[in-house]
Length: 283
Image (cartoon, rainbow, N blue to C red; front, side, top):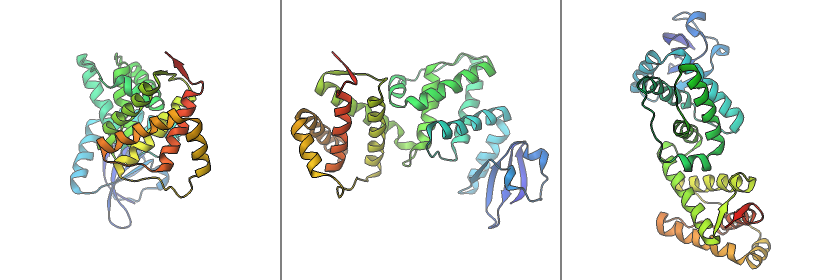
């Protein structure tokens, strides 16, 4: 890759072997390289492929406006997210996270601490991302002497959630809403309170996230490998659970025009059974 120009100390515009314009990030690139020379791959931490010329203008502006310490903080937590969450994250997360953190600097100076009305939902549905974001907020507060709290952590958590979703950012809010709707169907069908610290609850919410993503992608599970014996056994033993699954299936069809398969219904039933089997606090 050949360096075209430096965007800041840690970022540069380059041309690859196919003459494509790319933005690359690496600690101290500007100090270790020179314009028009080849850059070593070992120096590059992140690569951003530009879809069009307007993205170059956007990236150039962002890199010129956002301090290196912000990019370093964002990059460190993206790496931590990949390790802790063990999920594939969109490469653009570093940019969106750094941009948000930079806005927090300005808002912090004005004391403009915003409320996130979805705090409760995000904290319960995206526990891993929320925990990571609380760590990020704590480090940011220490760095800039600000007073951001869980409301900002919830907003930051959605950056990590968005970066995980194959369906993209536009569906994140819809997915969160849908998960809450399914949790409420189960809650009021059985008149229970969830033990939100239980592993069964964590696994159930994780499964619902995947199911919700499939709904908005319009994809379904294949019924080919479903065990009819297992289904018959469970439906006979856990009749109330399969009545609840029917409610969820009807809800999906009425509100989302989505008809999930028998195998998807079986998976839902198994998760609900685990929720009910000693993992809830009954009213």
